[in-house]
Image (cartoon, rainbow, N blue to C red; front, side):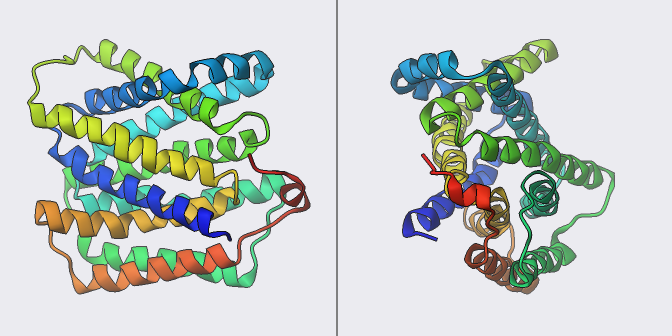
Length: 297
């Protein structure tokens, strides 16, 4: 892979890892945090993307436009499930479980594009999951609340898989800027509707909470998720999916630095296995004739 791709994946993983700390420090209901995050990200993009979005909508087929809207809905659901999980379980447990989507992505990539994994790539995936399991030995909490949080984090893997697959499909149909604007805008509408229906208030929170939501929009959404969506135009969905497994490592480190959540030997060793797995998969990414024929934008 090119240096640009490595940089995109690194920035993307850092951005989404920082989201755990920002979210924990934001004292507001999950639906408010996620809806304001997506609304802020969309509003920041619109001054630059309004015309490209208008032109893209004119060119897109109805099917592809609906797929992008669906992907935005999935992004919103993914964020809501994950942020809600942090209300009940630890940062480490949440991010470890929410990044369990490479298996689903691998299956879907094989079904849709016949992207077969080499033995080395399979070894990389197993190494990453082995690292996650090792981390999980000491970080997964026990109890009803923790169980609910862990289930919410696992549930988030399904919409994550969906929007990664759709993003992979859309890379040859729409430019990057209008794509992420439509994606985040659809997610914002979904979440805002949920917030209004829930009856939660958008006002009355501390200045720190609003600052954390702004940082979520800029660092985690516009930098983190946007870099990962851009990477989908350069490599397979599985490579991006496995790269996201680096999130638990970053989240655990940031949680230790800023929130005082301890780092055990198992977490350190598991993190090294996760990073090794990511590196192996990156060097042995699946290719198909269709992918080689496409020119990423």
